[in-house]
Length: 463
Image 1 (cartoon, one colour):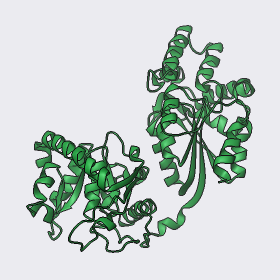
Image 2 (cartoon, rainbow, N blue to C red):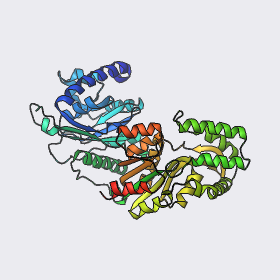
Image 3 (cartoon, rainbow, N blue to C red):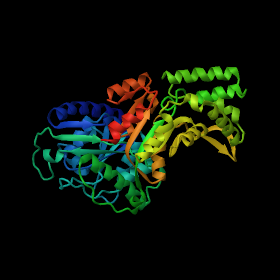
Image 4 (cartoon, rainbow, N blue to C red):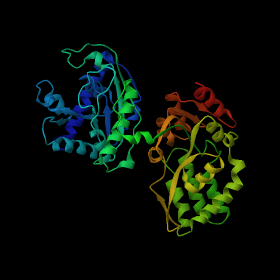
């Protein structure tokens, strides 16, 4: 296919044209952009937008941080004015009147498998309505579910005033706003692209997000699945370094050493790895965890649970910040659904979540077969972006529609979590998180008392 044969040419030519166009767009048309960091730096994704003007494609393509390959009608490829631009930027041709759209579908799948971005206007055509979106086609859902990629909603404001449907000439007005929403993950429905009800539901969820971002309405909700979802205010709180003074997993390893379950050499190697992780020199403490898990191969699950109980009873009062004992209950009194998040293993995180009265927890799961530990991790560490995936899947599985999300953490590995939230707080941040927080106007608190809840109450709850 063309995009395979000329991928390097397209990438270079598109990148150059995008940068040139961005200068004009930002100078004369685009007044405001927000949250473009929600578009991942790498990997495939479907970019879904409302559609009211030819300038939707031009403005978003120009100011986006990566090349976006849009589904474009055949008329643009047949136009002497647009054809060269379509080919040079690798846009995906859609013959709208053709019965067989196999080539267009292949183009989408090829791009997504190549981990590039595909842009789609779910409404299919420009809306002639200023404040209301047209009913969407379900292709946006089918592409995402078949290729197991996130959908990133974008709301576009003002292009209708620049050049509405039916206008002969554009009006040069610096009025356009482009707002990027948080990635929407639908892994629960992976491979269900032929299920009409699921695709309708996913499409409607995406369109409702686009409506919020664009300040429009989407009055075409049909799927009864929406009725099953309950709105909840969410508080996502990291464990280690946020509620506790030290790494719980590190303290647990020390407990195991005191009980002669790991060797002195193992303990030395584990501490070296944890130190590198804490300093931000390695991305996650996976190798340190492997030193520990090998000691529990073929052991009954109750063995590690008993060790966690003993460890917890010996460290509970010593390791917690003062506000940790009351924070969960304080937030629940304000109708927040509280979730303890950690890359630590499930037995540890579960114990702390129960004792601190959290509603739920997200942690790294240990693989268990017939009641015995295999020494392996189930599904990978809940670390970085994987933690966000786990949360989104939990919300989908439990029919929770998250609202007003607060995320609190001390470590730079939780930056994806802080981005996911509506309101982020850095608590006792490490160097990388402190830098990110300062650059993104995220409040930074250094805690050893109840200052955290006072901040939440003053800046979030009472507003």
